[in-house]
Length: 218
Image (cartoon, rainbow, N blue to C red; front, side, top):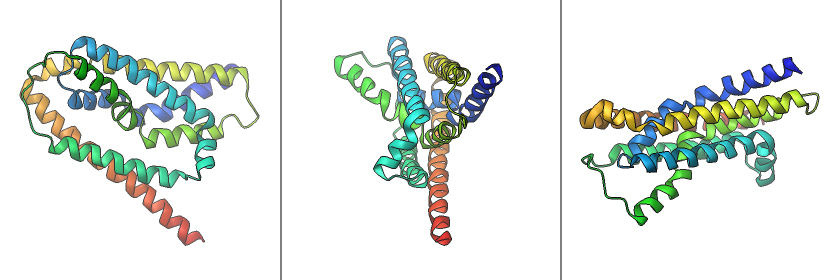
């Protein structure tokens, strides 16, 4: 049981943490919503963490069945996800550089932030098609001998570790803004926007390559 537990935790955390990359995701969220107040960032952190947990849990448990039900393959998921990520990066890259003056909170502003909590801040910024594809692969590959208590506990602990890292990074992303200042934040925002665009193109090309490879096999 202990071996199954440790193996499950290590595989899930080691497989998903580098792809999710909570520190980078938190900086991207900071770039997308630079005027959020500390209270709004705390709420966003809770919502993004909860949304990410649900997405990862669904991907690990029934993700393969959901894709199969709709007739969607992993390469197609990567192509579509790559397009979405690339468009998000391009939009952020082309957004005008505004000042960092805090806007007065309003009901419309708060509702807008809540609407963004799932898309694009959770999907695809935090848990993108790459993380979903890896989670689906891990869910279909473990365990081969059927469910066990050690495996289930390992999944719970691994998701708790990932969720905690996402929450901490999202919750305290505002400190980066104060540390870097207005100019530093704008420079970093453009840099990460370009990185997002490149990641989207890379995921898109990976999916296209797999689709082309499958045609050659047939």
